Length: 547
Image (tube, rainbow, N blue to C red; front, side):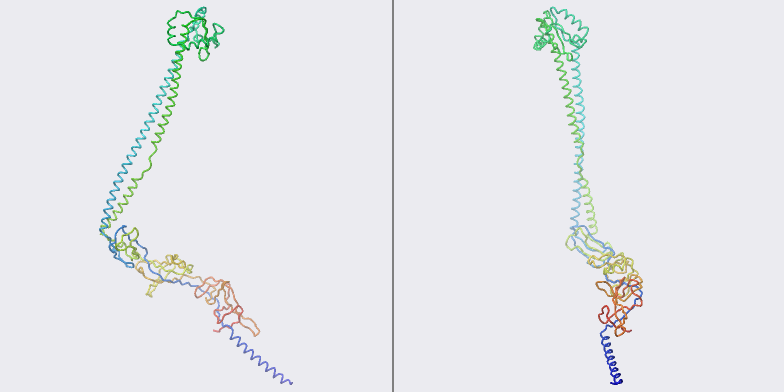
């Protein structure tokens, strides 16, 4: 094959390859997505908040009357504008007159009850004071009488002891003498006159003296027993016979009690024995009287203590304050309440049963019905328009971070294209019916808008200036966050080609038109896909639409 023919075949091959390349690129270009791009810019994000609402009165006024009044006529209806003093409704006068009479009678009954309660309280206080006074007198009397009884008993006891001591001091126990011992008896009498202690049978050494027989101790007990059995007649009989001869007697006495311990005698000496018995009887009687006086004194002390204790308890019980009694005070409170009720009934009677509007406004609620009785609650509610109103507009809660008190508001009244400006947000609160809404309130002065009118608002809060902003259509979002498509040029088999790459970003703010990105994430040289004719993926080849 010659050389010329070889070059011809090769040239044809190149032509065929060129044709196929062109066709391939045409087919590939036809299948690639066409995209438009933008670059980042600077600017602000405007959040225009809009909504519509209704003008309300600045405050509501409750109109009411006394309960239990029969409604004879209602002169207004809901939504009606009224002037101050305009008739709202009228009550039945006959029913009112009966209630006034009943209230007056109740007031009179309360006055009588108050008088009775005051009288009963006064009597109760007087009785309590009398009981306390009598208990005090009884206590004083118990103390005085007890002191007197104790003093008298003590005096009687002292007198009895004094009588006993006087008897013992002035009447020494007689000694029986006779026979051979007369000399000893005479010496004994002289010794008694010289020393009273010795006449009672004591010596200087404190021991009883001994005379007579050695066995006087044995006979002493027998002599005392016989002396104790003597009768008074026997003693008198023997006392009257002083001429009888007495035997010699030896007597010894107990050292402490002066009680005769031993009596012995020789032979019959009846007169001496009777004298001793009489002395012993008198001494025993005086001792008995002293013991009884002492017992009476102790009994007087015990009786005084018991009587004073009982009287003190009675005084303590009588001094306890009586229970509190607030009946009079309660009656007084009830009487004043009844007077207020009567005054209001009389005031309604003076107005001829008419109830009028206290302010200029609009009727928002009628709570009464003709022919029925009024209750304790409100009869009619009025929206007070005398001092302006307020426009309440519900908006999406999403806008909460964009609006605040003091932001300027533009108002567009219903059916009117003219805008009202220079008013600001006075309050932002949650909507009572829908938790996804906020109530924006704008206070309006008198004469701007009437209560009940509908209106729209526009709020344009000031926005921050951002250095990286893109159109909202260039922003994409999935589960991993926000991202954009960046257009890049790459070298391929067929030469340089355009592809898109996913690029994650941080969004600072956005609205329906633009989105603000964090600074430094994108540069001014990067082209951002703002729209695409087809679905694109990371690495997809695309064609850029030329503007």
